[in-house]
Image 1 (cartoon, one colour):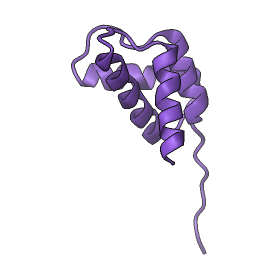
Image 2 (spheres, helix red, strand yellow; image 1 turned 135 degrees about the vertical axis):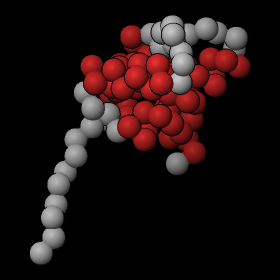
Image 3 (cartoon, rainbow, N blue to C red; image 1 turned 90 degrees about the vertical axis):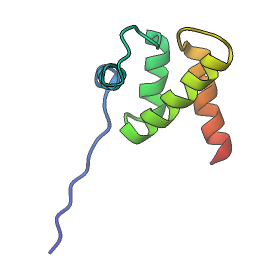
Image 4 (cartoon, rainbow, N blue to C red; image 1 turned 30 degrees about the horizontal axis):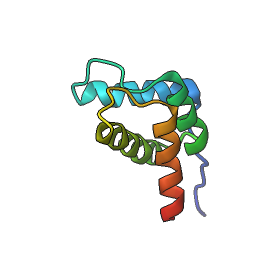
Length: 87
């Protein structure tokens, strides 16, 4: 006999709170993602924390390479697209 449980992903508000918590834990005090970038992240990742972490990191690296202080929707879309191209 096995035990089965299906975990659902985080919704948009939970994804934003999760990202904020992770950034706060890392010592970040200002917002690094626009609301539209967080929406793309939540929808495209289906709220899966491992995917959220991966894409958020990719988007931050993309923004940094362009000397931007905040991740906007285009950086997030690129992070998602880059990952899908690699997979």
